[in-house]
Length: 201
Length: 380
Image (cartoon, rainbow over all chains, first blue to last red; front, side, top):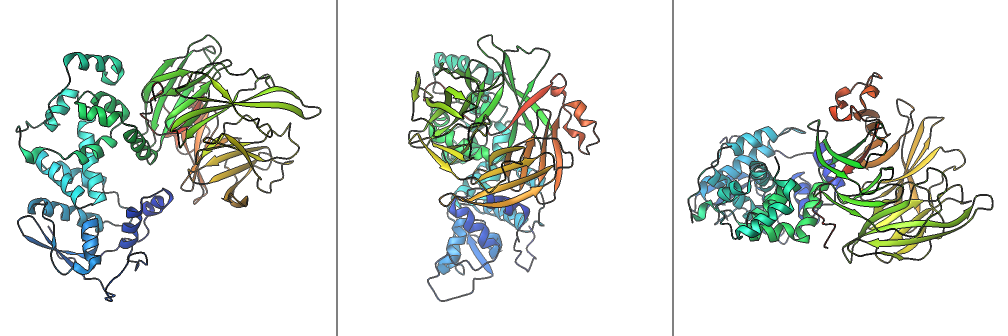
């Protein structure tokens, strides 16, 4: 994991952002992208008088291990972003549901995405990054993305999992997630009949 | 892909339910229908209207094309085939092949809303969900005098936002007279899930045969020039089932060849085409209350063949003829061909990746932009 970048990389209007502006967005999404552009947002209420935001953020994992990251990197998580805005950025942001190795992975993801050149397609990198992980870590990373409210990481991990299971048979899906079947044989048979074409290859 | 054996009852290997929902949202309909059998929780989740709605909204963001090839070899074809075409992968997959009941010649005009396709033949209207394979034949409505030999039904459909039911809206002529520009036109609504059509108030004026544009749960049509002395846009609110009128942009109706309505999901656009000059102008309805229009784009296409604008999305306009689908980029003033009947490709157009095996036997085809849908047609 490389920690030597000194400058905060801020993403300017990329083509992707312009595209995003056309779609109806939920308020949280708009706020995040505007924040990343580096504008001093008028919408976010600033309670204290301090005009400056800290350059670094300290994150604290479940085991109380600390990670120091740049502001822009941490903003990809709503929880971290809100902690910064509340003026708590200097103190460690506690992420008690996230273990250190998982947090490290999340940070690696955020850093790569923040460092991306304008219009750079990271799909291949994302696939390689997630493909390297065991199923256990993948699930934990998805759970962590959900807890830390990081849309980019959550979308990416969920899409990856969806692609894994997309073509699977029903039994394989149960196996993958460790789900017990609670249908009777009769019910299952009827469902297969009703949607026969969905079961074809 | 290797499937790892899970350790039973190991909390660290289980995935929270919130995540399951997000994962399911990213699956295609075919997988979802299959995965209803995984367990009761997944069955309930996938079958819920909330899920269907979220899935549809997510699908809207990744445009796909629905292609319906029409073969001249069998003009009385009763089968309609739906192909899904993804531009990014340049691959067309057959989604569904459906036999249409009845033995009339299939007209195959298509209009689309929320993953449902409305198609009609000479005597029947069908509603189809290509993702789930359901097809519904609508009951017969009031008879309509056709304006001319090749008239088609004046039909549109959309969602009533408060009852969450899809409604098909149909206008019919009781009679008309071109000479005196006199007519009697009625309107009826069929709610999906009900048994019959229901009359509504008469429209204030007749509309032309292009499928209406649905925006914000309101249908929009353009007036029928041959019967109306002044042109306007007719609106029909799907909830209150009431008609309204919008003044059109300041267009010279005497000199234009065609006019169409178009939407990008947020705003209404009016397209005026002049084939003689090969000029197209696109207006946007800036403010509905004051009927203020703004001219957004005007361009000349490289080839001057007429076309129908399908949709506008992020500065790109999809233009289709029955033989080709092009995409015009307003920012670069360049047109690229997405799909074409094979012999059309030999006109020297630069992007011939549009050639696809499926179009080999077809004489023409219909397109519509598409998002998958779990919306059921039967029990709502």
